Every structure is written in C-alpha cells, then in structure tokens.
Length: 203
Length: 203
DNA sequence: AAAAGTAACTGAACAGTGTTTAGTAAACAA
DNA sequence: TTGTTTACTAAACACTGTTCAGTTACTTTT
Image (spheres, rainbow over the protein chains, first blue to last red):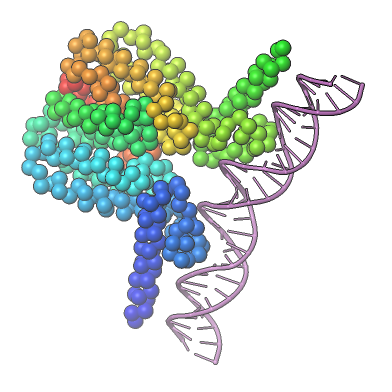
C-alpha cells in the first residue's frame, strides 16, 4: 500500500515547490512586492492552490523564515571551531551582521517583520529559542573561563544580542541615513569593535 | 490682500486635520489596518482629497513620524535637568524604551517601519539627525567629565543607541516570544541595567 | 454685475491585494 | 462499474493605493 505514502511525498514536494518559489521571489523582488498571485504564476498553479498547503500568507512567510534559520545556522557552524570563547562570541556577532547585510530580505523576515510572527503561537518560537540558546552557550563559556564577571548568561546574552541586533535593524531600515554611505560603514564597524572592547573590559 | 494668506492658512489647517485623523487612527487600530479611505471617512472628505495635501501614503506616514519626534523630544526634555551626565544618559535610555512601550505604533513609524523613509531623501533625515545629536551631546559630556575613556562621542553614541534600540525593536516585533510575559519584563530591565553597568566600567 | 479664471473637491475607475467558495476532473477504492 | 476521495481552479468578495475627468464654489478681471 505505497499509494498513500507516495501521495504524502507528493504533497510535501508541492509544499517545497511553493516555498522555493516564494523564497526566490522574495529575495529577488523584496517581500513587499511579492503577492500570492506572483508565487502561483511562478509555479504555474492557481492562487487558490497555495491555500491548500498554507493557511494564509503569514504561514507562508513563517515557513520561509524557518528556512532562513537553517541557512543562518549553516553560516554559524564554523564558529565552534574557534578555541578562545571570547573570540567565538565576536565572530558570532560578525556573522550575524554579515548574514543580515548579505540576506537583507531573509533577515527581515526572521528578525524584523511583524507578519511572520502572526503565524507563530506565543511562546513557541522554536527557531528563535534555539538560536538564542546557541548564544547563551558561548556566553556561558565566557563566564566559566572568567572572561566575564557577570554570572547570569541569559541576561548577558540578551544584552549582547540586542546590541548587535540594534545596528543591523537601524541600518537595514534606513535609520542611519543621516550619515553618508562611507561614514555609515565606518560607524558600523567602529561601533561594533567598541562594543566588543567594552564588554571585554566591563562585563 | 489677506485672501491668499487666509487660503494658505486654511490649506495648512486641512493638512493638520488629515494628519490628526491619521495619527488617531494609527494609534487606535495600528497602522497596518488604516487605509486612505479610513482616514478620508474620519474627516468626511473623499479619498482623492488627501492626495491634494500629500503626494502619497508614505509622505503621510513620514509626516506622522515627524509629529512622533515632536512628542518624543517633549518626553526627553526633563532629562537636561539632571546634573550627573552618566545618570542623564541612563535616564535617556529609560525614556527611549518607555516611549517605545507606551507608543508602539508611533515608535514603529519613527524607527522600524520601512515605508515612511521612502518619503525621505537620502541624507536628509533631519528628525533622526537632531535626536542623535542630542545623544552625542550627552555622551560628549560623559567623556569630558571622565566617565568614559573612549574619545569618539559619535561612535560611542552609535554603540549606545544600537544597544538600547535593540531591546525595543526585538520586543515590539515579538522576537522575545520564547520567554513568557514575566521573564520578558525581567530580561528587559536586567539586560538594560547590565548594559548601563557594563559601559560605566568598560567604555 | 457679468464673464472669465482659478482652486478645492469628488465619483468612478484602474490595477492590484489576500482569501473563500462552489464546482470540476482525475485518481483511487469498492 | 460504481461511489468516494483528492487535487485543483474560475470566479467572486471585499478590500487596497492611486489617478483623472468633471463639478462646484470662490476670486479676479472686465
């Protein structure tokens, strides 16, 4: 009785096809300019079909957001090879920012846009939870090896995440437009470096 | 020849009426659910009329965003009465966060949403520029009085703004949903306090 | 005062949006 | 060969931002 299994496989393949088309269009045109009809056109199906695989557009956005976390974790993988825990933390920050600049639409979906979170039951944002836990581990390592005096790794992690996230959010949403292109780059890297030095000394 | 002056005054009044209605609706229903037609209904004019006073919806959003900065500067005014420059800085941070929590839709318009910035010529975001300069002044004061060792006030300000902005942006856009309501509040205040302590020691 | 000109305003349309529903056609099970 | 389930879609609904021709109403000129 392999029919039901084949059907299930086909259903999953269709879901993936929709997701891939959606992601491709988002990254090409920016999420704001992509409609359900565009995605339907790309996969040569009717718009209504998409609603057989996703409850609504938010759920589709959430699914792409999940794929984003997969990609991000890949980018973070090499960090664990670094021996010095503080250097590990700094490299994580660098990669967070680089990921945001290289994949602005995906990052937006993952950490800025309101819409995808509408499809996520409160207290069940597993992708965010896991990514945050990865940060907490590194910070805990820094505490254990005496790099940081502060003892609460979760609070420290929150502080660090916020600081790094701050730049990227302000930058991506054009809130550094009062500086010209060059000064913007300068401020980004210098402020990042200053933050690293500051927590090394003061945390 | 007071007629042209009266006309000009009336035109400005109409602009204000549109703006007030828009702001009221945004704060009540959230900007996402407010359309040009809603605003037109509220002031009992045709939707087309709004386009005689604002080029498009982004320009309207930008105008409300400007009003937001006016309100924010009011909230910041009492800070200058504090004598200790570091305490001045901390109080600014507290008020930034409080403003965001108390006026989430307005804050969103000012610092997170992409749309209003479309109506702003690059390098001409005066509201942001002025607000940032206010921060730089306080930070410069901290440097002058020896609270901070780091000498570049602009870089330090950028670092501080980003860190404070980080919390608020993550919080408002539901990226702390992996914690329950209570823990969220705890983390917010504790991470803020930790940041203050850290820069006092390390910056 | 009458005619001409200007400014303010609107109805209706255009081209799109997310989403639902009734209906069809094909694949499967009995 | 039936009956049933599944996959899909055309068409509609109720919106959206925006434009434009056409209508008032007021102001200026004759």
